[in-house]
Image (cartoon, rainbow, N blue to C red; front, side, top):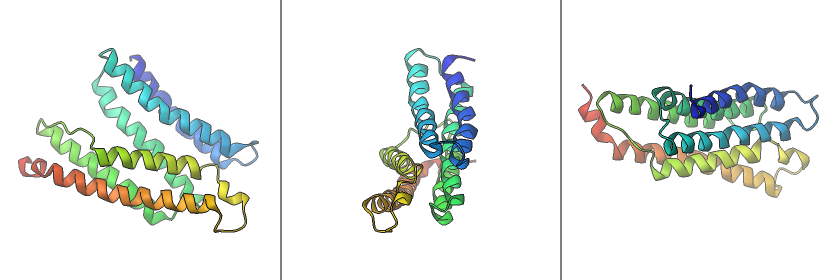
Length: 185
């Protein structure tokens, strides 16, 4: 159990902490604290990856758990925002479905000895989704009563940009890696 793997486990442990802070309104500044935990968990992904690569600490456990921890964190945030009435469920279904499809595709590729690196569109999708979540978690739009406030408009732009990038990155991924399906036995 090396340092990058411990950081990955720490990220998974932060998920219920994030959810408790997001849901329990009796905690002062709960949504801001939830946002802080979400940001720490998100940044820990970059830290564990850099440490693992720099010090040659890449493990099979890390290869499996690191992306799983990321998907759990983002999925937890998205699903929580559905329950809080902040995001339509159908958008979350599309975003999470993309993650399942890509994960399944990577498993098929790995079974055939093919390693697929993350593409540019996927990285942009991830960045936009993380920014969208960071803007939506503290629920700044609730401060204003007018639905057309600038923060609400920004939230909606980020939400639909994340959705479009999810679909575009999935199509790009499948088209660029169509050979994986052809090699599947």
